[in-house]
Amino acid sequence: MKKTLSLFLMAVLLVGVLAACGPKRDVQQPKESQGTTEKAEKPDKLVVWVNDDEKQKQALKDIFQKYTEKTGIKIEMVGVNMLDQTKKLALDGPAGKGPDVFYQPHDRIGDIVLQGLADPVDLGDAKGEYSPTAINAVTYDGKTYGVPMVVETYGVFYNKNLVPEAPKTMDDLMKIAKEKTNAAKDQYGFLMEAANFYFVYPFFAGYGGYVFKNENGKYDISDIGLANDGAVKGAELVQSWFKNGYIPKEITGDIMNGLFTKGNVAVAITGPWNIPSYKEALGDKLATAPLPVLDNGEHPKSFVGVKTWMLSAYSQNKEWAVDFMKFVTNEENSLHYYEVAGEMPANQKALTNEKITNDPLIAGFAEQIQYGEPMPNVPEMSQVWEPMGNALQFIAKGDNPKAVLGEAVKTIQDKIAASGAGK
Image (cartoon, rainbow, N blue to C red; front, side):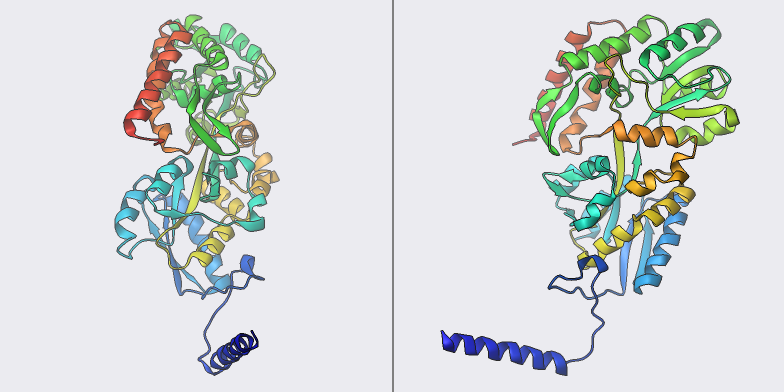
């Protein structure tokens, strides 16, 4: 044992001598990693794929420059359409031409992980800096697979020329719909894409419906709650809008937007991406609010989308890539991104900053985020959209909601089984 200990001490001494005699290297740690036993060598540059959008790129260019000034690491920004990045990464990554960091909608995380394109991210204490909803969105199979940048959901827009204040309850909204709708004149109290499952989901979820059972961020794809009693009650509510003539059966987003910008709609449920065109048309008469409370006292649980930075599995600079992602999404940089690109931050302090809460057109959506839930990020979610879209078309036409939803769930289960998922 003494001999073993002596050999060990000699080895340690030899390593120390070699280190002292060796060339000086610029080895630094990301700030968040200080205190650990490992040090990551600082790279000359990080390659970052960003969504190919001019406003977003301008905002990020400013932030990336600040990171370079802070660390000396050059950021090579490459614009690639967000929806094309994974296909390109699958080809470029193995060839050594891919990015260190890329940018994705959170609902694609399951597919990305299954393809082996991304590594989990250790956020450490920084995990608490983000909206809990955003963290849930980027959690897959119990691990964090992204650093959230942007959150988005939908809510209420209203025309103050037609209604003085936002409907606070569903009863308020139905009263507006009844009093302000004159379909013969293309005038409506309330419009939304009520046959689009993405927008209708909160009225299912507010009564207890769900897509897949979620236990602490882990989805049980065998447990689908889109035909339970809560989902049926939500579907019956949606069906009443068509039955009462409040919403035309042929409604689309384009039709709704056209009517709203003409001043023919009092209340519309849609997303913040419509702010520019709505504001141009209505000016100071435009206002926003969270979704109205249901008759059971619950807030409708809208789908929340999160755009997130992800760590490439092929990166040779993982520790610094994570440090970079944390820097880009801190409170200060998140607010700059919001001011330039116009998208709501996932950073919790930024999301609740007065720059956002005092913005009358963003405040309603920021509040609704707190009531929403992340769109499931499992691959099986792709099997849900078509059957539920078809079901809502039948519901709009007056078919029995319980029977229609039961058939839709069976179709979803068959599609998941046929895809080989869950095996």
